[in-house]
Amino acid sequence: MKLFLASGILLAMATLSLRAAELNVAALARDPNVARSTEWLAHNLAWITELQIHLNEIPAPEFSEAARGAALRKIFEVSGLKTHVDSIGNVIGERPGTHPDDVILLAAHLDTVFPAGTDVKVKRNGSRLEAPGIADNGAGLAALVAISRALEEGQVRTGMTIIFAGDVGEEGEGNLRGIRALVETYRTRLRAVIAVDGAATDYITTQGLASRRIEAVVTGPGGHSWSDFGAPNPITAISRGIVKFSAITVPDSPRTSFNFGIIEGGTSVNSIPNRAAVKVDLRSEDDAQLTRLEAALREAIQSGVNEEMAAQRGASQLEATFSSLGVRPSGKLAENSDLLAAITSVDAFLSNPSRRERSSTDANVPLSLGIPAIAIGGGGLGGGSHSLDEWYETTDRLLGLKRILLTTLLIARTAS
Ligand SMILES: [Zn+2]
Image (cartoon, rainbow, N blue to C red; front, side, top):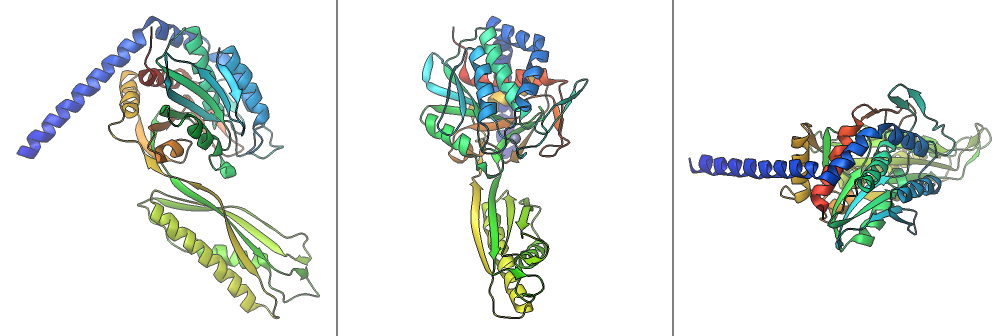
């Protein structure tokens, strides 16, 4: 009975505070400067799409984001931002607030998973854009460009300083080095981080998914395929290891996954290779599972090496070594955080149903340090992420842009 009453009161309180927050969003959206900003967005969707295409067609493989970054910087300057590029290549545009000791960071990663030479030219088919990277993270970069320009056009003044950043090293082996540096730079002033990653409006990433990326290398003497036949083969050894590891079961809950993403080795068809390597991505909702998986991976590869040596004639040896390509920390946004209240109220105000989810994004880093952070999409729809068939649909982009704008301003607060 008591319990019922208590939960009833809690429910009423939650409803009340949500209502209050919804009212705040409505009042914020009615503010003449904010209204001018959202109107500007509504009337300039074609321009935003043009810039998304422009940025996407400048290749930005991991560790080679500078050219795309330079183009983003120019666009930031047109939006009236104070820009600079930090020592690792993050492109930073600052919109000073009246309380510069408080900072909100809007970050979108510049890099793509596609290697140099990938055709990133955008094919247009009505409102549908097709190109590698066009959604992840063309949509995120377009949103940053759009929001910064809209604030300028609406002459919106904020309490907090807003930092817009195109960051490097989010994908693959970048190991989140861009966002790590940004968080380090603004650490003491950083009140919230919004990572804009990919398309969509239907999710709020409030939890960081932990991951470990590992390279396993097997080396041996190598030799001639005929005259040295019998020497152990690193490719065969690593393949044995992969098969062994793949046979292990991973739990559905906590959800856990693994992927052998790149395998390489050998120099010619008639040589026994002296080296083989494989890169593995391990992910889990639980760090303990990652520790277990990493140990199992080492054991499986070593056991593949032992088997290969036992199967061969002669005394030559293989050696397995392991190195870490990256560790992504996990973290969770507090239930009572202002940032969660802000995005939830904005979604209610915009009648946008959204669900919370866990994933591996730039938000992992601030979340792991207890700094409020979310990752959300830049609006529109996207698919085929990390594939050559990636696509982006511009319809409904405006909803995503309004969502980011209003959430940012609820946290940054408008100032007169
Ligand atoms: Zn992304």
